[in-house]
Every structure is written in structure tokens, then in C-alpha cells.
Image (cartoon, rainbow, N blue to C red):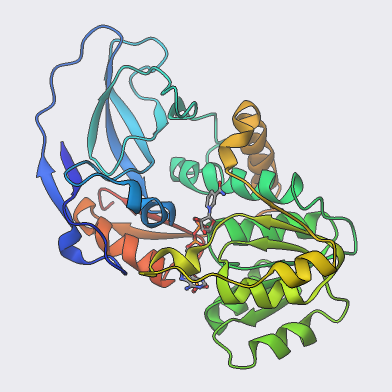
Length: 332
Ligand code: NDP
């Protein structure tokens, strides 16, 4: 197996030499084990966000869609696609047992009804469930309300906006390029878009949300979020999903959001999507139905080649991706 190892601690934005590919000898499988080969690997913001906890010399964490090649475990038969939280590696021998710290660490994919198994990393996987539960369970959006989403053109954000539209809300996306805004409005039917790199961001956001903001799905934190929160309505709800604006900072900045939180009696709630482990398949099946009915669109930004994973990862951190950033191991 080829495996990416965390060789040097990230200092600010990740550099090529921070990761190293090593060869690992795999032992033949024993009773209860199976061998899976990665076809699609995920690059996600948490791989940067959680980096302070990584140990030098250990594999980089990450999810993948793998095909079972050999098996002595009846729950993981040969020829099935699985999701596995196996890290950045091409081949894995696993005993199929749930990791006590991560109940969804590996599972056979449900029937995607002809759709690509790669979607198990995005719209029909963890980011899709983050959108589904994180919006519906925390913001409780109501018909006619205005929902603002930061990181709107990425895997989670682009999905959140479409669910909010299904619930009859007015949806405004915030992202880092006008081209992404065009995708949100033309393809995903968002009602409005604001580019956070616009020097008049505060003013444009106010103009784009004439009825104020009732729900804010926050993927980025920092100054963008302070601006959004300062423009919220009484009793607004905020789903605090992530803070990517700070992940590459050497000293993440503190943001001053307490003023409007207090004065407007806002409810702000952070979450980790694994809170809904026991409803995981509900999320995937609901998202699958919406995708098959044409109600949720998805986009993947695909990089080809295991050796290009680092490039895919840093491109995602820079915002090159539209929708879910993934790596396909082989070219077709
Ligand atoms: P995305 O597909 O949205 O990719 C990351 C995007 O972040 C980039 O495309 C880029 O878009 C944007 N970005 C990068 N730097 C900045 C910056 N300084 N300020 C604002 N935006 C920036 O990733 P995901 O959809 O996978 O994740 C989105 C967020 O959700 C992350 O914060 C992640 O940590 C969080 N998350 C939380 C989970 C939970 O359980 N709470 C689960 C899954 C994800 P642009 O061009 O717009 O800058």
C-alpha cells in the first residue's frame, strides 16, 4: 500500500514537504478481515483543522470509497463498495469492526440507484449529512425566512442552500468568486450571492437581504461571520458548522460576535455531524431521494492520481473546488 505520512507539522498554509508517501507491506488477510482498494479519496477542511492533534510520522486521516478485493468477513463481501475512514492510503486490511471512537468508521454503501459510489464522500456521505442535520436540526428554517450560508459553493454549503430552498426559504450564498456565485444562482437556484472578497461586503450583504437574516449556516467563522451576525433579525438561529477562515492562521483571531448575539437573543449552536450517528442512513437516504428526484444537485471537483492528493487538498483549502473535492485514484 502507498500511504501519506504527516512528516512535518503544518505551519500556516500546508507545504508540499509536510507530507510524504511511504510504501507499506500488507499482511495476508486473516479470518474476519478483508482487503479493500481505494477508488476515491476525500480531501476535507478537517484534515487541516484537526492537524494540531496529528502525530509526526503517522498517516493522514481521511475517508475513502474502496472496493473489496478479498474477504474473510461475511459483512464485507468481495465486489462491494464501502466507505472507510482509513486515511490517505491505497490499500487497507481491516477487521470490519466499528472503531469505538467513530461508529461510522466503515460501512458498505447503500444502493445508490446507479449513481457514482464517489458520492459517498459528498452529497451521499458525511458532507451531505452535515448539511441535512446541521441545517434542519439546528436552524429549523421556516417558509419565507432568509437563510444565509458562508462557504456556500463547497460540499456542505451548496447542499445546505438547496435544502433551505426545498423548505421555502430565501437563500443567499457567500463565497469567494463571482463565478461560484453564478453557479449558485444559475444552477442551484439560490436567490442571491455575495462575494466576501468584495470591499463593500457588509453593504452588499445588507442590500441582498432586505428582510434581514433569520438563519445563518456558518462554515467559515471570523470576520465574514461577524458581519453576517451583526445583520441578523431578532431570535435568529445560527448553525456553527466550521471555521475554515482560521484553519491556516498561525494565530487564529478572536472575533467579536457577542454584541449582536446578546442584543438580538440569538440562538447559536455548534455541532459535529456524528451527533446523528443513529440517524446516519436516514440522512443518506433522504439526500439520495432528493438527488434522484432532481431536487438536490451536486458537483464534484475531481483530481486524478494518488500522487496528486496533496495538490487536491491545498486546492480545496484555497477554494479551487466547486462542490465536493475528491481524488480518483485511477484515470479512466
Ligand atoms: P468546501 O467544499 O466548502 O471547501 C472549502 C472551501 O472553503 C473552499 O472551497 C473555499 O471557498 C472556502 N475557504 C477557504 N478559505 C477561506 C477563507 N479564508 N474564508 C472563507 N472561505 C474560505 O468544504 P466542506 O464543505 O467540506 O466544509 C465546509 C465547512 O464545514 C468547513 O469549515 C468544515 O470544517 C466544516 N465541516 C463541519 C462538520 C461538522 O460536523 N461540524 C462536518 C463537515 C464539514 P471560497 O472560494 O468560497 O473561498
